[in-house]
Image 1 (cartoon, helix red, strand yellow):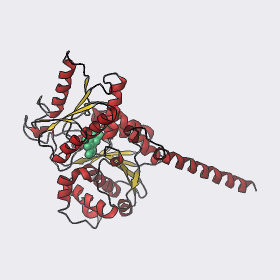
Image 2 (cartoon, rainbow, N blue to C red):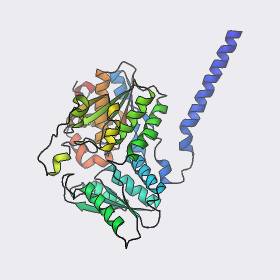
Image 3 (cartoon, rainbow, N blue to C red):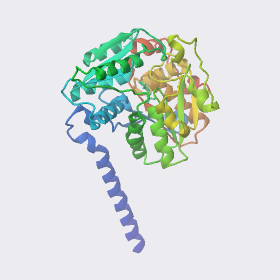
Image 4 (spheres, rainbow, N blue to C red):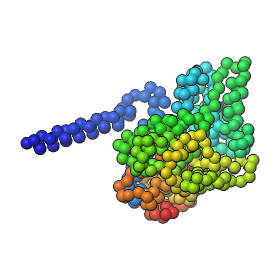
Length: 381
Ligand code: PMP
């Protein structure tokens, strides 16, 4: 009887704890949100059945595209704005302005939160930014300043233009408007929010049973914050940088060197990455990347063709319309699954944004390829 009692008690404990866990998992979705910011984070993990079956691993996407502004940058924008508020640098509904230099998702997240939280977003971007993105920023009510494309060393480059514009308002003694520069590349709120939220969520969602984490780096905030968290919690988790063609980070991580792959000093392309993929790849070391660099185990180089084929493969097999950087991460994950992982290992990659923002460039190109029937045809193993 003692054995039966013990088995009964153990199964009751297991049933009770899984019930508690299910309550916790759905809590956020059941409650009413008081503001848009409350909807940021707690994104789901989606099992990618096709990649899992083809590789024998458990492959999951962290669905950052489920954030209300459509990307992981919502977390960063919110963390930066809250930090400014806590330091009393901005006050809601007083006309205060948040400046940022970006041609990507961060501008959209900042613009959305500015409208929601009572600020003005002023976004500087190169004048050849795609109409899709400019239109979206316009819809979110941002002030848009287009500048001539230039190298990061040029004071008129769009990131520098945003900083200078914020400084000009701050230094104008006749103005009673406060201005701040969000500075996603150097602002350490960026990696911290990924450490405190993105990584922690993945840790809880996988119940700590994670073997590989895969992410690209645009500012470096995601990979830095997540890699630091995972390594501190379980040193055997492998963190992998997925790097698009034209980026210098692969050589930096694998060989400790950074070739300046690009062109002549003074041209715009000097610090830009020559790829169809948007949002990831770097040819300089940002403060956010450097915070997590020591925690990155390896890098996988992904060429555009592989990412384009993966886009088609995931749409065909999963109904998933992913953005370009997510497809780079998926290619790197599949390669890791074939090359480095053991059967049954859990691999999580970041699905940063949806393909909706990439229709005119990346997806237009992807449609030129046939849907690959075999995953191994995509991965250049
Ligand atoms: N994917 C997309 C679409 C992005 O916009 C970004 C940010 N530039 C990233 C990935 C990379 O994230 P992080 O800046 O944290 O390195």
